[in-house]
Image (tube, rainbow, N blue to C red; front, top):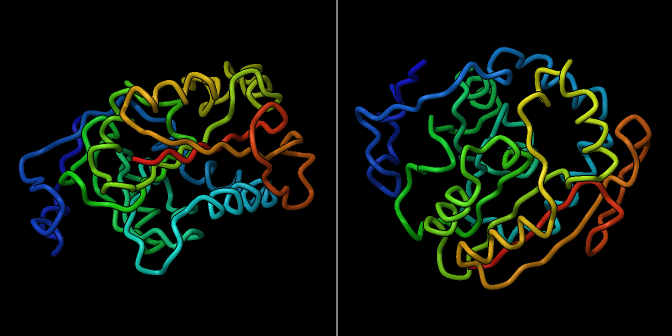
Length: 237
């Protein structure tokens, strides 16, 4: 179905950094994230230390300073954005956008492969758990590069391919509305794509060293990969 930008065009910052979205639209397939918003949010309530471990790891990589200007791509229900102090983002699923807006996030209807922002606008861009669902990961990374200022950073968080959690999700794929269409990538592949997009420097950390049901405390992130299922790469423009 076609989802129109609608009232996004009336936001006061349109024209002051964001592109004019009038007459634009985003085509999305029947989205499990749109149809199962409550179930999506309930997962984080069920595994609070997984969520807190992920938030703590992302905070390690975010730029310092209260005046930092950034966005979250694939903001979902706004749970991470609110915890991280991110005020803006994009999300193609309308019910997800509604939930994020209730959490105080201003969300535009757009996809990662075509960001509705001018070039060189942000200090940071966050992509958390969303690259598994992109139509074109390389194009999305290139778009993130475009909207970043010089020395800006892209933070990509993902479940690494062949990690214990990825294997668990793959086993559940046929009976899970969320994992059925997910694609898991290796840290090596993501790092290579980041380099191809133009990013010149990368830092990698990992967390979630147990399956979700066994994470009973905040698991501090460590450098590198190979032990934790959740990988974060900070790439500098």
